[in-house]
Length: 250
Image (tube, rainbow, N blue to C red):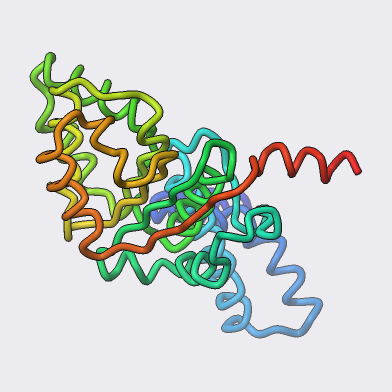
């Protein structure tokens, strides 16, 4: 191919937003010629490569937008360390059918038992299936909501959060909430109710959530929404981090 047609082809591929085509067409032409592939097989191979690469880029964008503190998969979680955790249920949830049904997940257990790891793994699985995910801690979420309210952009932030397919709220119960913070968090969860799915991790059993929200009425209304369609992951036992560290040293 002469220089002018190559320049024109690269221009067209750029306009069509086909970067994998642009990077691979010459190489694949040589390979297909050597393998006696016809032009249909050549184009089919380029199309397949473009689609695979496009899906990879889409997943990377979803993961970046989710704002995970770290990327962890369920495959790297040692279920043997936390025998109270229902592994078949957890792996089934990774298929993300619960998101289609607008169901919630609540992971309960003492500090260090791997609740955040499980939440991150389920969040990653959701990103890999093309879903919109946002990860935050309860304290950070409440801080952002109060700040947005003070700056008169609360509605915009609420719209961003409720547009997610999956909202992950980590570490509920680590810090008691102010009255206004508790009300704002309740409002977000209410807005997400049956519009999307929520994953919440907490070191407190349900009967102690009133200590966080400071109101039995608010806590009752919150639990009523969260537990209407819910999967409970019990994660009781010795610290996952401590056990995992010991096992690596042995």
